[in-house]
Length: 342
Image (cartoon, rainbow, N blue to C red; front, side, top):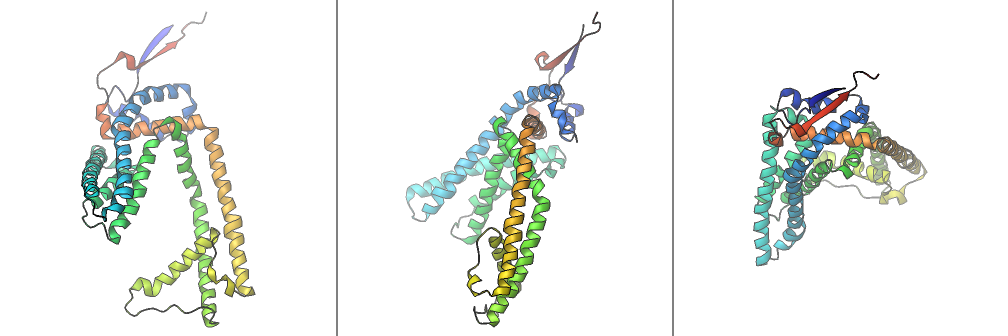
């Protein structure tokens, strides 16, 4: 029997071959490669090390940022206007702590982009990870929290902070395949969304015409515009409101002007309900169900694919500098090959 010793690529060596190993693995068009036991052994070996790095240097700061941000945004800020001394103190302390964590996470992402010579910025998850701390820093340095602009930024920051935490959940074994399913569902929905919004815009145009009929019949009042209104309010606001009403109709929330519709107007409304509510939304359920069946039937393959993606994500980040550079006999794979079976 011949005993071969093979160094596991990418963990014990900082060579270009080792760094590109998981990149090539993740880019493989044949995802069934993750069903191979040899590939699973390689991924498990690396994941044992990189999962600890991810939790300690990535997961813990992200979780702290989420908790601090939630308490600051939902508990402290609404009560800040009461001018209690304790609340004001908490406001200052939380801004400092959130700023420290946001700067830490931002520096990690920026250093990753620099070390990869800009290639890492092509990843959507990198952009989300950068946008969340940037918006956080923008808002925590604003003194006036009683303005529309502050809370507009805060609303988008909230979504990005929770999304940043969801990106971390991709590294957790119990959640990685589920996060993969959500991502794949959005990809499978792209063509459907084009058709869906095409129908929404089409019926919005029809509803605008019906609204003009109701104005002519004096069933409803004409919308008056001020000469000092901006371009949006003069020319586009009416169309945007019609798109919103058409979208809500597709979700089952109907407009209050239905009582003024005649038979011809009701025909357009019926067509809207049949196409948008009955046909397209049930088609969406079928698309998501098919995606769920595909991902859940290959949950093991999907799980290892997500592990490989996260290992690549960490190797390309500043955490890649923490990889062991010296040779360690415990980080090798030994393959026993039978030379003579007689």
